[in-house]
Amino acid sequence: MSLVSLAGVAKHVTLPDDSRLDILRGVDLEVAAGEHVSIVGRSGSGKSTLLNIMGLLDSPSEGVVAFEGREVGRMRPGTLDRLRGRSVGFIFQQFNLLAGRSALENVAMPLSYARGRAFWSRRRLAAEMLDRVGLLHRLDSPPEQLSGGEQQRVAIARALVRRPALILADEPTGALDVDTGASVMTLLDEIASDSDAALVTITHDVHVAARARRHYRLEDGVLAPVELDTEYRRTALGAVSPA
Ligand SMILES: Nc1ncnc2c1ncn2[C@@H]1O[C@H](COP(=O)(O)OP(=O)(O)OP(=O)(O)O)[C@@H](O)[C@H]1O
Ligand SMILES: [Mg+2]
Image (tube, rainbow, N blue to C red):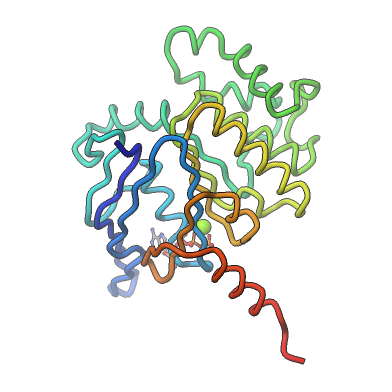
């Protein structure tokens, strides 16, 4: 059974001039536990919109989203919020950490909405996750005192501290240099496969995309599978400026 499935998903909005903007059209996608899927596409192609729908943050205008076989559109708001909190971890390009709060507090934050043991042990669980991303020695540092790569590792620890079944990463290396980005992706891959979580990565970077097992391209809201060879060629050719 797939962890998350989208069938015929479309998203459209009405713009201030009353025209209709189709952001996603007829998207079908199934992601199973333990899979790593990448999605590439140019700016404005609908990538973040798609990720927000998969992460139960946004709802489609048409089509069906199911999580662990249950239709999301039929859930009550409270059920949906709990499912998202327990099952989905988001990682963003700009880290989105709280300034002035320590790394430990940032990572413990999602557990303050948990119940029982996860709630009472939140500081210990947060410290364990920070240890896992190699930052045990920086528990008390606020984000503004950490490097970009360290901040992204804190953000990864925060996204994964509840052991989500689905990890959604929106340009996770977009603000990092190539080497730091590669080490952050290696870490993310490792932690995802340790816990058999599914990982969906949105990226402009074919090297980051290449780490996934299945590859898709989003173009004007239409999602299609791609062969990475083609994608490499397209990027390589695109990178050559005419003499
Ligand atoms: N609520 C909204 N109202 C109007 N337009 C929207 C809304 N949400 C998204 N859009 C538009 O839909 C398109 C897709 O947006 P989205 O953020 O999904 O793109 P993206 O592929 O993530 O782009 P980027 O690579 O720049 O992050 C954009 O043109 C955006 O302006
Ligand atoms: Mg985006």
